[in-house]
Image (cartoon, rainbow, N blue to C red; front, top):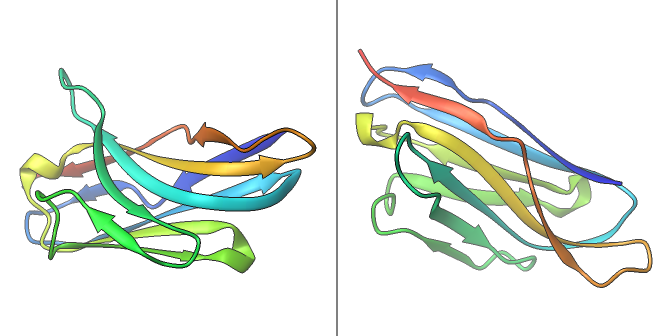
Amino acid sequence: QVQLVESGGGLVQPGGSLRLSCAASGSIRSVFAMAWYRQAPGNQREFVAHITRSGTTNYADSVKGRFTISRDNAKNTVYLQMNTLKPEDTAVYYCYADILAGISPPIGYWGQGTQVTVST
């Protein structure tokens, strides 16, 4: 079984920072692309940032210049450094990874989500 476990969410004031982590574990042979998505109440889940295994990154326009995605391939972990947070960044943040496990073809896995609240 493969699991993605996120951590690092919480309550922060506008202008503050948080760092999210997501670790993949289980019968993993290789982790390919990893990404972060978020879902605010009443909204659809939306793309935040993406990183390839080699480190190429891509961001949603709404977070460019404020958020940084990175990864540690040795730990099968992806990070999201979030700076200059705004109230509109409030959402449940989910990590996603394309994982090759066992003898199956690579498939996508989701974490359980971590709440980020930006408020005074």
